[in-house]
Amino acid sequence: MKLHKPVLLEQTIELLNLKNGQTVVDMTAGYGGHSEKILGLIGKAGRLVLVDTDIEAIEELKNKFSNNSNVEYIHSNFADIDWNSIGKVDRVLMDIGVSSPQLDQAKRGFSFSQEANLDMRMNQDQELTAEMVVNQYSEEDLASLIYRYGEETRSRRIASAIVAERQLEPVKTTKQLATIVSSAIAANSKINPATKTFQAIRIEVNQELASLTRALPMATGQLKKNGRLAVISFHSLEDRIVKRYFKEITTGVKDLVTGSEISSPNYRLVNKKPIKGSIKDNNPRARSAKLRLVEKIN
Ligand SMILES: C[S@@+](CC[C@H](N)C(=O)[O-])C[C@H]1O[C@@H](n2cnc3c(N)ncnc32)[C@H](O)[C@@H]1O
Image (cartoon, rainbow, N blue to C red; front, side, top):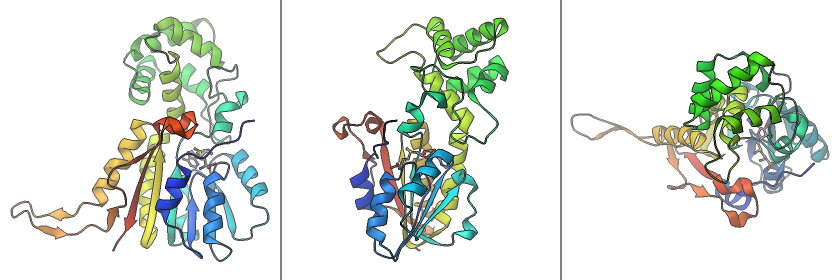
């Protein structure tokens, strides 16, 4: 199994501006790349809470940090965390999406290049799998989610091909689905024609956009004064949600008639423009990464 190479590591750590003794929540701890650096900076006096929805990641984290009594573990979707048990915090990090070990292990069913059952669950306890989405959703719902979450304009043709195929036999594997998509639409770029459909189904299975939308206000609401939230996103749908929410909380309310500010915002943008990953990072995932941060000021 390939290790997960953390994306935008130096930039994230620098902008989080960590101090000894702080309380930090890593909401997507994964394989602990960012967390390891964070722990080094908050020291033994600090408190680090590691969250991940993937039980395999939590087990890896427990091994990795077994000598650190100031590290806590929560196996949960970050949208369902019980924040009362954590209290107010100095820093929160969200490095959303899937990790390399999730993508690279064939059995997880995320990748069209490796044969596996259509699974795609980040949380192995959850009921809904990619196989259920592909075989049970109506043609209309499939077309709609492939269009919205995959930004795939040929979604109707793909949904119709899936439904035609599943009437003959259930679509059970990653390669089966990739073949259906490739036969339904011609490749019009270098990327595999199934890429967008797989992204869409993964987002649906894991309810990724809904979880992000729910988690952002909970995380910012939990920040102490001068506390910071950093979010790394990997595609435009996620980044749009983060950008809009950050704009909303960093903009004051203006009197519609006079234009004067009635109330000032409680947060400020730490970086006006997102920090972008690049090919130079020697990590294909970094190319589309964007880092945004807000700070609580009142
Ligand atoms: C990109 S990886 C994070 C890698 C991590 N920063 C590191 O350096 O190893 C994203 C992780 O977030 C987890 N994740 C994604 N969505 C989640 C959610 N809604 N709740 C909790 N964990 C989630 C995934 O299981 C995955 O392990």
